[in-house]
Length: 216
Image 1 (cartoon, rainbow, N blue to C red):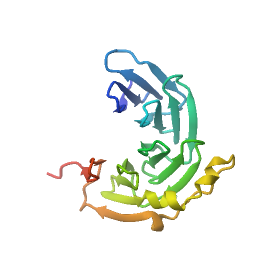
Image 2: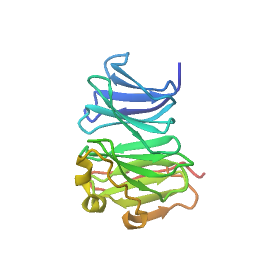
Image 3: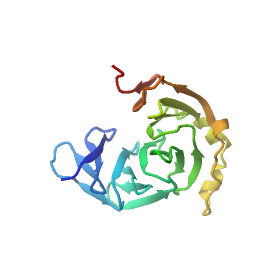
Image 4: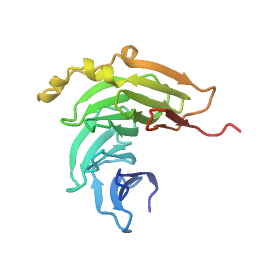
């Protein structure tokens, strides 16, 4: 038996995915006690998982510093994305399913933006000083929110990123240029006095909620 680090439900509510210390991610259903798929390929702990909005794919982030995209039907890895210099702490799909954001652990507190069609790295941004705890896209995809155990939340202008990026380059075989213009994309950063932020969530009305441990 190995520790399980994260569990995430698909939008349908019937399927869920888990990941853990055994270097695998797994696909489950709520009415069976055994896994439907075992996603094997990472060489270290799988620390985070996320379902694609269409529920046909699962993404996983690992301490081996890679992000993988898995086909839920075949169980095969369809994308391998590398670029982090430390463990991948959190991942999130854009709501249209075209992009994936990944956040690094301490030592690599960067936010990387990936094109899922070809697995290209499109953006590399940094504003936090410690592990990225969560990533969350606004409902209409215009804003990417990131939180960190350094006690801060950053808001990124994802719509501007899309408008100004040469996305037509993504459709060719060579790797597109990677944007690193943090000052241009960063809308604002909000700090607590000393409380780490461990979770964020956009409501249906785009109100951003945050979660941290009690100081009492």
